[in-house]
Amino acid sequence: MVAGRVKAAMGFHHSSPRAPNSPAPHAEEHTRTPARVPPPPSPAASKASAFARSLGAYFPRSASAQVQPARAPPEVAGLLRAIEQLQERESRLRVQLLEQKILKETVAIVPFLEAELAAKSSELERYRESAVRLESENLRLCAELDAAVLEATCRKQRIVQMEKEMAELRKQQEALADDCCSSSASVSVEHRESSVAAAANTASLAPLQPPPFVSKSSFPASPASSSSSSASSSTSTSPTNSGSSSSCTSPVPRTRVPELSKLPPIPPPPPPRPPLVSSSPPSSLGVCGSAGAPPPPPPPPPSRRTVSRACSPSKSGSCVRRVPEVVEFYHSLMRRESKRDGGSGGDQPNGGGAAATRDMIGEIENRSAHLLAIRSDVERQGDLIRFLIKEVEAAAFAGIEDVVAFVKWLDDELSRLVDERAVLKHFEWPEQKADALREAAFGYRDLKKLEGEAASFRDDARLPCAAALKKMQALFEKLEHGVYDLARVRDSAASRYARFKIPSKWMQDAGIVSQIKFQSVKLARKYLERVSSELEAIKVGPDEEELMLQGVRFAFRVHQFANGFDVDTMRAFQELKEKASMCHFQRQRQNQRLRQQTLVART
Image 1 (cartoon, one colour):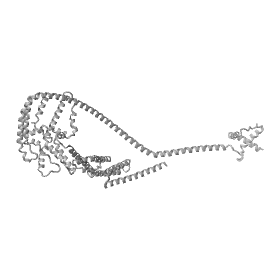
Image 2 (cartoon, rainbow, N blue to C red):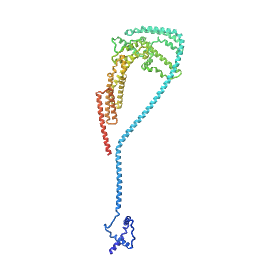
Image 3 (cartoon, one colour):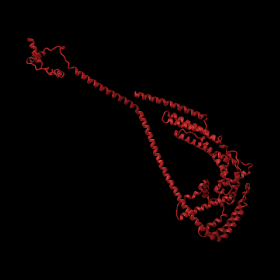
Image 4 (cartoon, rainbow, N blue to C red):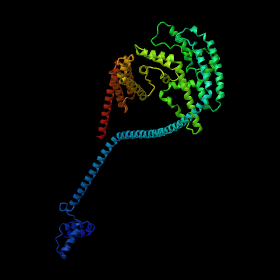
């Protein structure tokens, strides 16, 4: 009993430190059974419980006797919270893993996207440059068009003004002609004397003219007689000149008609080409002395122009010194096209008043001098032109080379004339046959020149590939256009040539055309060899496919044009084909390697 009291006392004393922990079970019990209301404790029971608590502090119960039902729920809640945290962390990790995968795929695609972007940017830059270039060219063409329109309007205005001035000058000339007619009665005696003197001069010069084909021994006897005739002509013309100068001391237009009337006694102007004139008589004499004529017809016989060689050295030198610039001017006019003959007065200054009148008078004087020179050629070169007419009409050839030689000789002979068309209009010139001969000769010569240019072409390895290929392509286009132009006019030209006895066999496919096609095949071989060497230098690159396609296109064009290839060109084409297949295989392998790298980067 004493022991029980001691335990109670001890439990009472030790119950105070555990007091803070005890309310938790009681609170849990209250939470578990909220509906139960405890009865009010009695005083005796409260004392007993206090004593028991005091003893329980010193004598605790066994573990089996203690019941702790309130600790299980906090552990379950903590586990649930941990599970939720783990699930949330797992979802975050999955999102991070997916982001990492997307980042890896993006990093693998970035080089391709950068390369594509660089290519597009370079292409865009090229397009911009081409647009700027085209815009500048468009502006330049617009400026040229405006300048051309302005020039055309200026020319029209100038033509209208010149027509007005010409009409005024015609009126003035008619008035001057009326005045000259009134004054011509006073100088009729001088005109008759001058005409008599001119007839005497021509009569004295006629016996001195050599026959069409003479020997060299007939020329030394001519200088004395020619000198005497020239002296007589000078003595006979001196009084007429003095008379005309005394009778016509008024303005220059009034004296122009008497001067033109006294033109026959004036010595003729020198020929356009003095070297040809000096060399023509010996050549003509040599050809006349030969037994048989060569395929080109012989040069013409010496005409009246040889009489001028018989004059004295002093007078002939003075004649040559008189007109060197005029000879050059006439020669340049003869070389130009006939369409430009009437446009010499278009560049005259557009002055007004007396200046424009003086310019028009000078132009009329130049025209008059030109017409006088043409008239002189008609009179003095009549024998030559009639001889050329006979040669052209009787010309018949066996080959086109003979036609080329004949046309060259004919042009050399006609180049002596001041104005070929203007002089030949006064004769029955076979213009159609002469034009056909020239057309055939020039056509054959142009094709022969093209064939020679293609045969002598050499590929320069120092040039860049693009420039070399462009040069070869331009040469082939020239060959192609030449052959196509010949084929277009072949039928009509062949019928016309047959009528004039001109050979036309060279125009067929077996003639010069076959040689041109063979040279185009050789050109294709050089083109393919250059493309093959460039492909070897490029290895594998973006320009490889374009270069290969360019070579194949050119080879196809030449093949269609020439109807096939030779052995060397076919070998070059086969080499290009093998290199093309090899490059295609290498490109496929490279694409497969890139795909594999892309798949590895994605995984």
